[in-house]
Amino acid sequence: MPMFVDHSPPGQCIFCRLVAGEIPSAKVCEDELTVAFMDIGQVNPGHVLVATKRHAVTLLDITPEEAAAVLQTAQRVARAVQAAFDPPGMTLFQANGPVGGQTVFHFHLHVLPRHEDDGMALAWPRKEPGPAVLQAYAARLRAALQDG
Image (cartoon, rainbow, N blue to C red; front, side, top):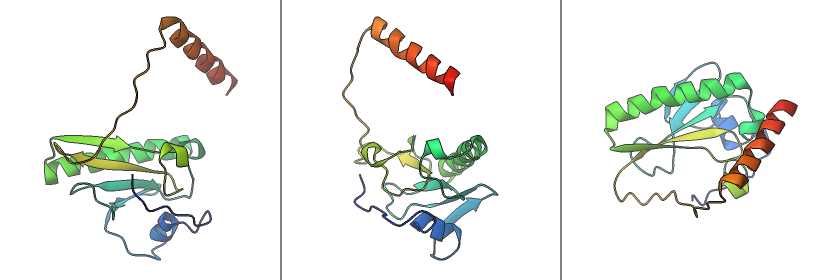
């Protein structure tokens, strides 16, 4: 995980400043709701961040329109990364909150070209709680969906 953590106040974070043109960036593309730019901490050539233009901290803070726009931009960028760099794999990564691995508290998604032995590890302890527990989890989520 990157060591950089942005502790700027909302609206003054590094990505807000980038959107406002206050700091330089290697911009890839932008539209009304999103901006895509090169990650300064490149894992592999072609590592791009896609962010909302409006300051929002996590996935829970963006609008459905922003969510759709971010994924559409990410898909366009992923196609360009594939054409320009031809990686054998690609990972989309989006973190929410410090415990989730978020280090810049402005919603963004990584479009990360992948190569064998590139040092990037996505691993977690596999837990298999069993069908009854999974059904109970699903029921809790269905109830939450009905309430919200």
